[in-house]
Amino acid sequence: MLDGTRLRTDSQPDHACQFCSDHMSGFNHFNERGLTRLDTVHLRDTENFFVIPDSLPVHPEGYHVVMIPRKHVFSYAQLPAELGEEAQAIVTELETALEEELVLFEHGGTKHGGKVQSVYHAHAHLIGSGGHDVLSYMEEVFNQEGITNYERTHANHSITRNIERLFKGQNYFYIQQNGEALIAHDPDDSMPSQLAQRNMSLLLTGEVVNWKEIPANSRFADLSIERINKVVSKLGLVL
Image 1 (spheres, helix red, strand yellow):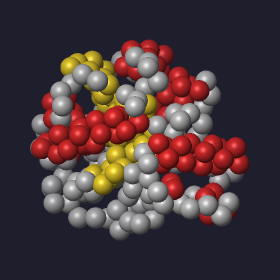
Image 2 (spheres, helix red, strand yellow; image 1 turned 45 degrees about the vertical axis):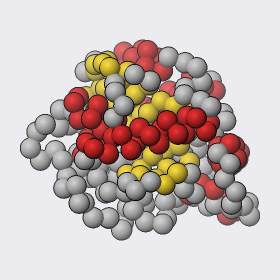
Image 3 (cartoon, rainbow, N blue to C red; image 1 turned 90 degrees about the horizontal axis):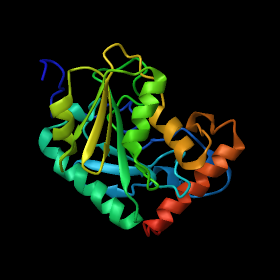
C-alpha cells in the first residue's frame, strides 16, 4: 500500500456529489411519463452501503444495480478493509433474490478529476452474468482494447480485501466473479470509459446502450424504465 492512496476512513459527505445527496439522477424520464421515480429507490440498505438500480441496466431483466458506500471515497480500495464482508453479503443476498449470479465491476480512482469515473464517489456495478464466463470474456476485451497491464487471481469472501491485495496506488478496473478476480492497472488514466457497460451490454443483448443518451433517446429512456421496473418487481419492492 502506498502512502496517500487511502482517504481518511471518516471522510465526510460531499454535498455536491450526487451519491452523497438525495439527487442521485439528473434524468427526468420517469417524471416526464408520470411515473414513480424508481431509478433512485434504495434496493438494499446496510450500515455502510446502499444499492440503487443502474440508470440504464445492460441486463435485459434489469439485473444491473450499483452498490455505493456511504463514505465519500473515490474507490473501494480506499474503504476500510473490514467492510468487505458486508459488501459481499449484499452481493450474496441479491444473487439469492434475483436467482442470478452477479459479477462485480469497479473502475476505481484515487482523486477527483480525469475520466476514470462518471461520479467521483466509489461505486461498484453488479451485473447478472447470464451464465457466461465473464472474466474470460473481459480478458478478450482487454486484449482487443490493447490493455496489457492486468492479472487474474483468486478472490475470497471480502471484496475490499481482494482489491487491497492487488491495489498499486493507482487507478484500476476490477472484476470479480465467483471465486476469481481480474484487475487491470491504469496508471496513466487511459482506460476506455464505460468499459463494463459497453461490453456487458454486447454480451447480454447484442447491442450497446448508453445511459448518457437517455435525455435525447426515447428508446433508451423506455428501456431504462422497463428494465428498472423488472428488477424492482423481482426484488419484491412495493412503492
